[in-house]
Length: 347
Image (tube, rainbow, N blue to C red):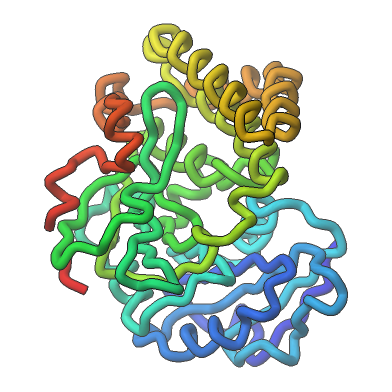
């Protein structure tokens, strides 16, 4: 399935603090800019693993285009973002596993600041980056993933002006466009759920890490400039299908039983609203197909739920307090701690 090309020293000959995984799919036009950003990192104790997810032939990179600290793996079938990242994780034993989108361009101090968060507390499993809009760095593309209790994930502060100061703090989950995981925690919960393919796979992973008792934070002085949040891909039929399906799966699989039964009516209303809104906007087909696919696969999700809940260490209260409960907060894309929005490290 893979055709790996290793460049430079063999992997066993070097020790690395972190492995950065970049999953590409028809994104060759971003490569030169991304490579320059990675070449400029002040933290050099990292390896790069580039996984091409069966891009069109003219959109593929090659081993020859990789820097000396990288390896390249070519897949001949698109197996999804989740599975491709798991392949990258299995190829390294570095203590920190970092996900970076090909259209997320980090500042030079990004990796150093992202990894420094883990030195502060041993119970931190994941750290997210502050994503600024690449086309307008004065706007926030995302400050971590929040989760409304009724089962709706969203990127905190998306589209909001960047404040002068920002306090780092906990978020529900780290957005996989640019984040780092403690490898031991990532492995303990099984990495990304490959059945998700893409969309919500990072929220699902964050949910499972929280259930296992880990903490997740934002390193808002670790900054990337991200194109993806403003691209049409997020509004495509592909995204609507997987978003609708995976929202249901995330809720059913991970929500602790007391909250699952209490919040199920809210989740049903949310799903009904999404379906109605899709009819109004003329995007009903992929959304309806996604919801139908979610319930067709619900048996598999319920079986996965048994394993996830069986390993739960966090209390129901602990999970509940890291969710967003106000629908108004969702509409305003607020974080779970609004005071943090007024004060994070200065740009």
